[in-house]
Amino acid sequence: MSNQSEDDVRVWLVERTYSDDEQNLIILTYATPDGEQYYRKERALTSFTDVRNTTAAVDAEPGNLGMVDDPDLQEQYAAEAQRMQEVHDPDDVI
Image (cartoon, rainbow, N blue to C red; front, side, top):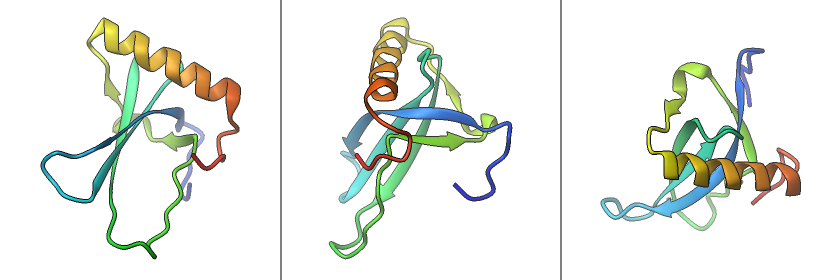
């Protein structure tokens, strides 16, 4: 990630959903291994030739992270983030 800062937080892919509101919009949700914070990235699929890889992890600025308030969702995100961390290198294409 360009403009990477030493304060950036590594977050792991925990969810990939397709927007109900927008056609061809994928919502990627990354979370910290404790499941307490998340980072959401929206990506439009404009064409088949528009190749942008989705990696197992990204480094996000702390100000771009949201808090996960739901304990069940926090547990789900933590479990998935930890699983991804164990199975994949951060730059693995998912």
